[in-house]
Amino acid sequence: MTDAQLIEHLYNRFNARDIEAVLAALAPDVLWANGMEGTHVQGTQAVREYWTYQWSVIDPTVIPLNIAATDDGAQEVEVHQTVRDLQGVTVLDEVIRHVFRVQDGKVVRFDIKGPSQLSSVPHG
Image (cartoon, rainbow, N blue to C red; front, top):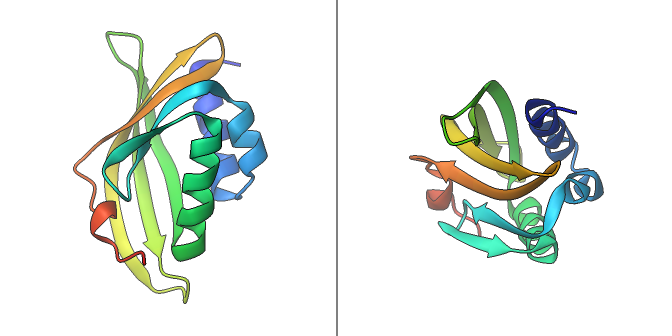
Protein backbone atom coordinates (compact mmCIF):
# COMPACT_ATOMS: atom_id res chain seq x y z
CA MET A 1 0.00 0.00 0.00
CA THR A 2 1.38 3.42 -0.93
CA ASP A 3 1.38 6.29 1.55
CA ALA A 4 -1.42 7.96 -0.44
CA GLN A 5 -3.51 4.76 -0.34
CA LEU A 6 -2.91 4.50 3.41
CA ILE A 7 -4.12 8.06 3.90
CA GLU A 8 -7.23 7.50 1.76
CA HIS A 9 -7.94 4.42 3.87
CA LEU A 10 -7.59 6.49 7.06
CA TYR A 11 -10.14 9.07 5.92
CA ASN A 12 -12.53 6.35 4.80
CA ARG A 13 -12.31 4.54 8.13
CA PHE A 14 -12.45 7.81 10.14
CA ASN A 15 -15.66 8.82 8.37
CA ALA A 16 -17.08 5.34 9.06
CA ARG A 17 -16.11 5.76 12.76
CA ASP A 18 -14.01 2.59 12.51
CA ILE A 19 -11.54 3.67 15.16
CA GLU A 20 -9.78 0.30 15.39
CA ALA A 21 -8.87 0.32 11.68
CA VAL A 22 -7.51 3.85 11.92
CA LEU A 23 -5.52 3.22 15.09
CA ALA A 24 -3.99 0.11 13.49
CA ALA A 25 -2.41 2.37 10.85
CA LEU A 26 -0.79 4.69 13.40
CA ALA A 27 2.60 4.28 15.07
CA PRO A 28 2.20 3.57 18.81
CA ASP A 29 3.76 6.94 19.72
CA VAL A 30 2.08 8.93 16.93
CA LEU A 31 1.89 12.70 17.37
CA TRP A 32 -1.62 13.74 16.30
CA ALA A 33 -3.12 17.21 15.91
CA ASN A 34 -6.07 17.95 18.19
CA GLY A 35 -7.99 20.35 15.98
CA MET A 36 -10.57 21.09 18.66
CA GLU A 37 -7.98 22.45 21.10
CA GLY A 38 -5.24 23.57 18.73
CA THR A 39 -2.72 21.19 20.36
CA HIS A 40 -1.37 17.68 19.76
CA VAL A 41 -1.96 14.39 21.53
CA GLN A 42 0.64 11.63 21.61
CA GLY A 43 0.11 7.89 21.33
CA THR A 44 -2.74 5.79 20.01
CA GLN A 45 -4.56 5.72 23.36
CA ALA A 46 -4.60 9.53 23.42
CA VAL A 47 -5.90 9.58 19.82
CA ARG A 48 -8.64 7.12 20.83
CA GLU A 49 -9.65 9.34 23.75
CA TYR A 50 -9.61 12.46 21.58
CA TRP A 51 -11.84 10.92 18.90
CA THR A 52 -14.16 9.31 21.42
CA TYR A 53 -14.69 12.73 22.96
CA GLN A 54 -14.91 14.50 19.58
CA TRP A 55 -17.56 12.14 18.27
CA SER A 56 -19.59 12.58 21.47
CA VAL A 57 -19.98 16.32 20.86
CA ILE A 58 -19.73 16.86 17.06
CA ASP A 59 -20.15 14.87 13.85
CA PRO A 60 -17.21 15.55 11.50
CA THR A 61 -16.78 14.28 7.96
CA VAL A 62 -13.46 14.80 6.21
CA ILE A 63 -13.11 14.07 2.50
CA PRO A 64 -9.68 14.10 0.83
CA LEU A 65 -9.70 16.14 -2.36
CA ASN A 66 -6.03 15.89 -3.32
CA ILE A 67 -2.99 14.08 -1.90
CA ALA A 68 0.51 15.18 -2.90
CA ALA A 69 3.98 14.31 -1.67
CA THR A 70 5.98 17.28 -0.40
CA ASP A 71 9.67 17.87 -1.03
CA ASP A 72 10.51 16.59 2.47
CA GLY A 73 8.60 13.32 2.02
CA ALA A 74 5.40 14.17 3.85
CA GLN A 75 1.95 13.75 2.33
CA GLU A 76 -0.08 16.97 2.13
CA VAL A 77 -3.82 16.48 1.77
CA GLU A 78 -6.35 19.08 0.73
CA VAL A 79 -9.57 18.12 2.52
CA HIS A 80 -13.17 19.22 2.63
CA GLN A 81 -14.20 19.19 6.28
CA THR A 82 -17.84 19.38 7.26
CA VAL A 83 -18.80 19.42 10.92
CA ARG A 84 -22.35 19.03 12.15
CA ASP A 85 -23.68 19.28 15.66
CA LEU A 86 -25.36 16.22 17.10
CA GLN A 87 -28.73 17.43 15.78
CA GLY A 88 -27.35 17.40 12.22
CA VAL A 89 -26.95 21.17 11.78
CA THR A 90 -23.83 22.14 9.83
CA VAL A 91 -21.61 24.30 12.05
CA LEU A 92 -18.45 24.26 9.92
CA ASP A 93 -17.77 23.77 6.22
CA GLU A 94 -14.20 24.43 5.11
CA VAL A 95 -11.38 23.32 2.87
CA ILE A 96 -8.07 22.98 4.71
CA ARG A 97 -4.82 21.05 4.45
CA HIS A 98 -3.59 18.12 6.52
CA VAL A 99 0.00 16.88 6.60
CA PHE A 100 0.92 13.26 7.32
CA ARG A 101 4.33 11.81 7.98
CA VAL A 102 4.52 8.07 7.32
CA GLN A 103 7.37 5.73 8.28
CA ASP A 104 7.41 1.99 7.65
CA GLY A 105 3.74 1.98 6.64
CA LYS A 106 2.49 3.75 9.80
CA VAL A 107 1.53 7.37 10.41
CA VAL A 108 4.01 8.89 12.86
CA ARG A 109 2.74 12.48 12.76
CA PHE A 110 -0.40 14.33 11.66
CA ASP A 111 -0.67 18.12 11.51
CA ILE A 112 -3.36 20.55 10.45
CA LYS A 113 -2.02 23.17 8.08
CA GLY A 114 -4.79 25.66 8.65
CA PRO A 115 -6.26 27.84 9.07
CA SER A 116 -9.04 25.66 10.43
CA GLN A 117 -12.00 26.98 12.34
CA LEU A 118 -12.60 23.67 14.16
CA SER A 119 -11.37 25.07 17.49
CA SER A 120 -14.10 27.73 17.32
CA VAL A 121 -16.91 25.15 17.10
CA PRO A 122 -18.75 24.88 20.44
CA HIS A 123 -17.96 21.52 22.02
CA GLY A 124 -18.94 21.41 25.65
